[in-house]
Image (cartoon, rainbow, N blue to C red; front, side, top):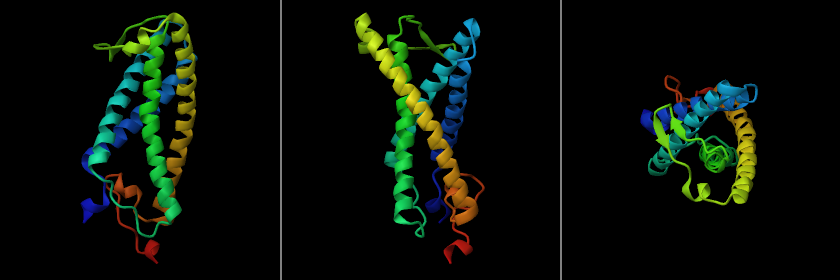
Length: 196
């Protein structure tokens, strides 16, 4: 019964790993704007390493999600709340995959043509068809992907705030066990008062 109400251990591990890396990368992206020279370069390399790691983990998380259904939401949740929960989760997948993809696109068309070494050791290629574009086309792709990357970052930050607020609402007001589905040690079953 406990496993029917909770995400699997792999889903939980991927969720919290990706969440921590996204928060770190949002901070790094913001902090880079205040740095110059080698310090900015080093942080940019770290930002790329974290971003590609998020991309790989997110693809793994999506594949896991498609092959391992999520535990059911509490029966007492309104239909619009369930629709909002499902919609939010798919928006998160769009952010987790879209943000690193647009960053990768920017790096692939950058006039600096700086190689990417993930975590200072693992060579990561440019996106081939973008990297081979003419210079004018590269400039356009860099501008568009940069704008999209920034929009996703701000939208993703807002989505995180909304997600955390909803989780806290379910934990402390509704007390229906929703947060316990993803947090080890918390109950994933509704409290008696929430069932009345």
